[in-house]
Length: 84
Picture 1 (cartoon, one colour):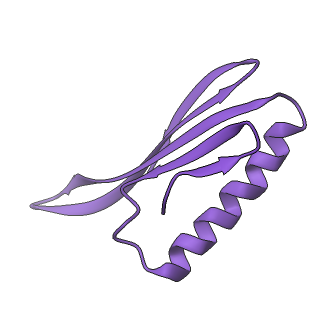
Picture 2 (cartoon, rainbow, N blue to C red):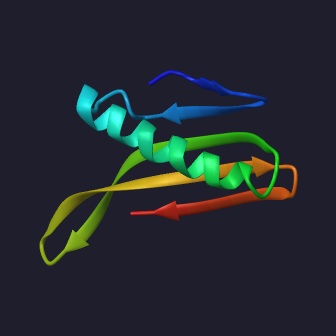
């Protein structure tokens, strides 16, 4: 997934290269839909999504778990979140 220009703003995907093409296109469509919603309330300046694998300890072994960190920049402020 490459950086994508979106009118004035941009969307940057980091760590998504290991996904297959179907997963990438699905994520892009979800993100594009949410960006359109944000643009109704504020000027969209940029979005950075970072997919990384973290490890969760469960009993005696570690299980891989994915986490997405997002940073959204708009004319009304700078917002960040993390979801796993």
